[in-house]
Length: 116
Image (cartoon, rainbow, N blue to C red):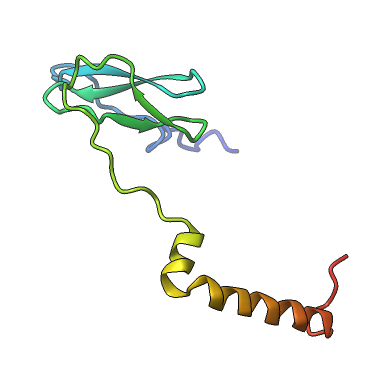
């Protein structure tokens, strides 16, 4: 490099703005605990109602550690439908048994390759 090359600060990597005269929104910290015992603390704005549950980092549903934030009980929702529930809605058990026997016969006749 020549001595005449310009040297500047990395624009975009650093901000020239400061936090002076900036009023941040008031916040409150809400704690959630999952069945595995993990404790998660999430900051929320003070003027909102915190949700009753939060997904934990392990994937389970965590509930409020202190229920004093909201006194509304969690309303039970509809149970999650399984694959079997949806299958039974479309077909009766007699028809399912016939389909299963047909598939087993197709497998025995060599329609499907063996995956052993």
